[in-house]
Each structure stands twice: as C-alpha cells, then as structure tokens.
Image 1: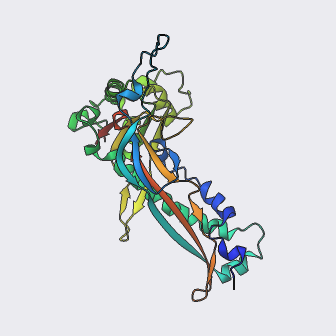
Image 2: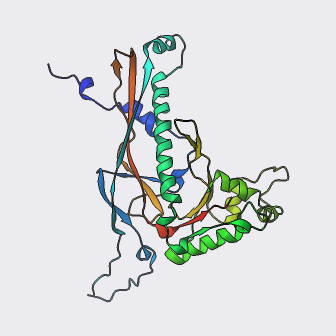
Image 3: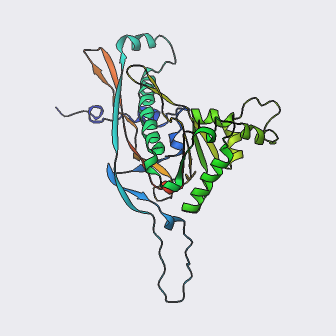
Amino acid sequence: MPMSVSQARVVNPILSSVAQGYTNMELVGHALFPRVPVYTTGGQIIEFDRDAYRMVNARRAPGAATKRIPMGYSGKPFALLQDSLEAPVAREMLRDARAVPGIDLAGRAVNVVMKSLCLTLEYDQAMLATTAANYAAANKVALAGATKWSAATGNPLTDIDAGREAIRQTCGIYPNVLLLSALAYTACKNNPNVIARLQYNAQVSPDATQITPAMLAGLFNVQKVVVGAAISWTDANVATDIWGNNAILAYVPQQNLAIEEPSYGYTYTMEGNPLVEDPYYDNNQKSWIYGVTYERAPVLSGISAGYLIQTPA
C-alpha cells in the first residue's frame, strides 16, 4: 500500500516554525557566533585574515587589468553536528488538556526539547570562545592577584582598552561586542574604577541602584555587552557555569550576516533547522512523541577579531 502524504512527510512545518522561533534570554552565545545558513553537512570554514580589512588601490588605467580582492579563504574543515531529542506527551495529558482552552502541549513539548538542544549549543560555543589555545599570544591575557577585577587594584577599563587595541592592531577594526561571564560581570560592575567612572556619567539615573550591561557598553565603547549566565547540571546535579570566569571582546557584524562577511565566529546551521519531526504514537508509553533535530556547528572564522580575558574575577 503506498504511503499517504502525511506518512511520507517526516518534518512538521508548523511545529518547526515553533522550534525556529524559540528564544532563551539566558543564552548569549549567538552574540559571538550568529547563525548563518549552510546547505551541506560539511565543508571548509571561510576564514578571514588581514586581507579582509586591507585598503586596496582600486584605481585602473584604461585597458589595464582590474584588481581583485579575496572573499576570505578556505580554512579548517567543518562538519555539522546533528543533535536530536524527543519529548513524550502522555495520552492522559492530552485528554486533560482538551478540557482547558489554550493549552498547546505539542508546542510545549517542542520548547522543552529546544531548551536542552540550545543549552548544548551554548556550551559548544563557550568552549570555543574560552579556550586560550585558540588565540594568538597578543589576543589574550590571564589576570591574577592584584590585577583581577575583583581586587580594588584591578582595572577593567585599562584591560578592555588593551583588548580593543589588540583587535584593532590585528584586524584593523575595533570590537563591537563584549561577552562577560556571570562571574566577570559581577566583578566588573562592583569594581571601584568602574563605579567611579560611571558615578558622574549622564547615562546613570539618580535612581539607579545597579550598573547594567547597557551602562557598561557605553563605558567600554562597544555596541553591546551581554552576560553569559547559563548553568548546566551534571547527572549528579553538580552545577557548572558554562562561560566560566572569562570575558571575550569580539568584532561580529550586526546585520547582513553571511559566511563571506568577516566575523569572529559563526554558527553554521543547516538551512531549515531546527526541524520538528512529525509526531508519532508510542503504544508502549501510550504517548505522542515529539522529536526535534538540530544540525549546526559553531566555528571560529576570524579569531584575530577576538580577545580573551581569563580569570578576571
């Protein structure tokens, strides 16, 4: 017997739109690794060096050859990672939900799965961004003792300025994003040098009781400051701070994103992902099963456009 259209379709387009529109305000890895679509499961990362920022003499005499500029170069290979999870919705829960208008158990099941998949992506992004071996010697610093931001003698202002200048010297452009781990953010906003500088800043309301990321963005001269506060738990219920004790400065384009645009990093994502499989019924569990598949791989495409500050707190 031939399959029906419903049987042949393995992707649920309505629920996939739920998954693709999913957001979690606690997750900030996309600030360093924005999503760009790819159409194959593997290939080579388009990386960028100084040529991407170099001024070229484009002047041409009549009949002369036209100069060309590169659109990045083929760097290290990448392979998309495929994560897939399912969430069951018990038949009894569906029965009870019918009695209460407005309850969308299918959408909730998809969001539960997406929360886990996106947390895994956040972890993968953080591991790339906080691994010191990924940075050149001039693009990283490890603070200790009196230089830590949690010490009265530490100074985030000079450390951020040093990072900004290191990025400008290596790729010719200032960073526009600062990602602070939760520990780094606490140390930064309570640092006496930061407090003193902001004390007379017109951006600070007389009623302000906390220094916010928006205030720090103005102070550090970047477009935005984001705080990586995500926590993961092991099976033994041990909590881990995903972004650790780090601060990362980076240049990341804020619009017209494409893999040909110079950037600190990207999240290569299979076009159309994440996608929700058509739900199926599990007789043994007496439940409808909702599965989500997410093919993606965060990559460093221009690490000279990044600067890592380790152990600021």
